[in-house]
Length: 395
Image 1 (spheres, rainbow, N blue to C red):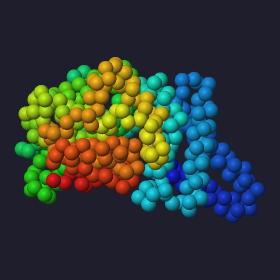
Image 2: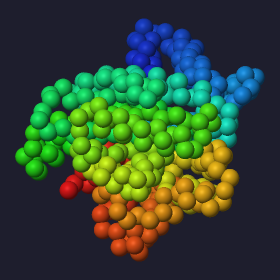
Image 3: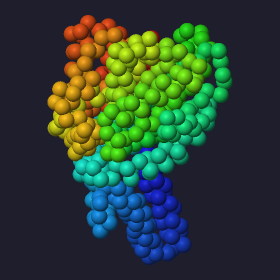
Image 4: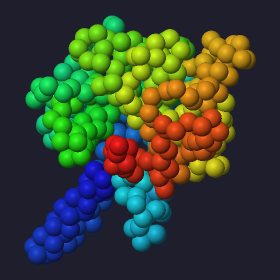
């Protein structure tokens, strides 16, 4: 939406300048000025795409060529949007969402292997910086207080409820990113939305005055740290919260998406075996990956931002040290029993890469007679509703 607004603003100023030139009978200057404006826009976009391109290649010489390819892809997408009468591919999509998904998918498709195997570490810095820019504005909007936390030698971020109440709930949110990229701060908006929605539900549905804190948890990522380091990090931050927040497990909620919430599900299975009394109250699972053997889904999910080139490189890298066939099979949550875990809400979009996994996960739960898992399959893409929808908080 910001990009679309920038084009509108540029067009408005060009129109004003053109009218002024006509008024002063100086139209002969208009064409050079318009060309200059277009050239300025082109250069600005080129510089921006060069910066993006620096993370998509290992050769500085190829950066300008990557930038040109990105610009051409953007022009193609804008042209297609115009030819459709400025209507999105799906009615529930906005222009900004469609552009984001299409450009991200293109980048992952063309450069996913380089991102994962060569530049994963470099990409985390800009992602974190973007999250830091969103942090304080988002917290002001939702009335939370950001509070950095160093725990287990990792930097996490609290979104604190400023009003300390007798009843206290903690949400631990585990970000996605294919086990190799992204940052907890990228989920600042989602974390604050979860805080606000839970506060509303406790008050309106249960007449409870509850303070809700959200912890955006960090874990070590591949390729520096392979399985099960990230899984253990997620487990350890949960134990830290129990020990330092003076809170019981039945007041803790696991939340997350994709790779992050897969680890939360797996840790619930671990707790089932080792310490069932420490199971959290509930897990809110958004588009979790539950089957690591599922590869090559591009043809079935042409509107998902995740592609084979990205996903099918992430998982093998993350599991590179798991060489035993049986052990590797059991790493996937879907290959384990789904009984005796906490209540779980799971949500996938029908356009998403992991949607088919969700269907099989539900079939397994039904076959095992599991009755504390709620499945929600949204029409379209879950990212068209960042909050995950009201249904994820009901009950």
